[in-house]
Image 1 (spheres, helix red, strand yellow):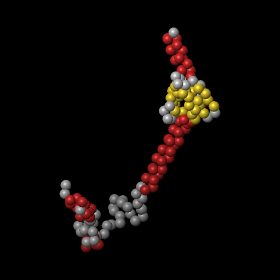
Image 2 (cartoon, helix red, strand yellow):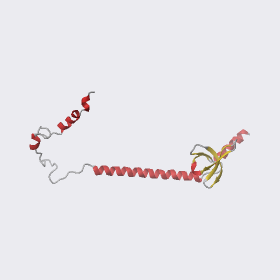
Image 3 (cartoon, helix red, strand yellow):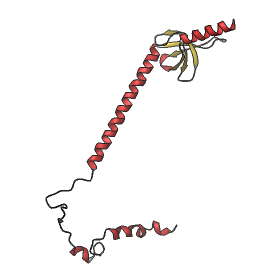
Image 4 (cartoon, helix red, strand yellow):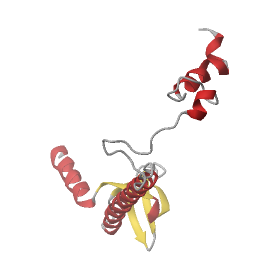
Length: 158
């Protein structure tokens, strides 16, 4: 790799030659002042009465707004679904449900008072914690499934 690619003359010169007018001279040369392009062509090119359309700036802005609106709608509707699912989970909470909190504490609901829940994390040491209902992340097992598994273990163990 040479240092010529980083020199301004190495990368600007092809652009200057490419933009040169059809007379063969460079920009600002004597032939560029005398060479004139015709205003219209015989095959129906842009004439004096026709104007060129802008280069798509408004089209691009419209597309960005449509995409932004679509993302906003998707976000709004997915948020509604999650809120509805969480509301149903909170309404179905009951005693003896096995839960997991946002902090990772796993326990069984013993008592519920308003927005607070008393959970038991360890039966052997009788460890209990009062938590806010909002800190419950998931319900691991509902009371009905907990009772049925306890009955199965008692019937197989006896």
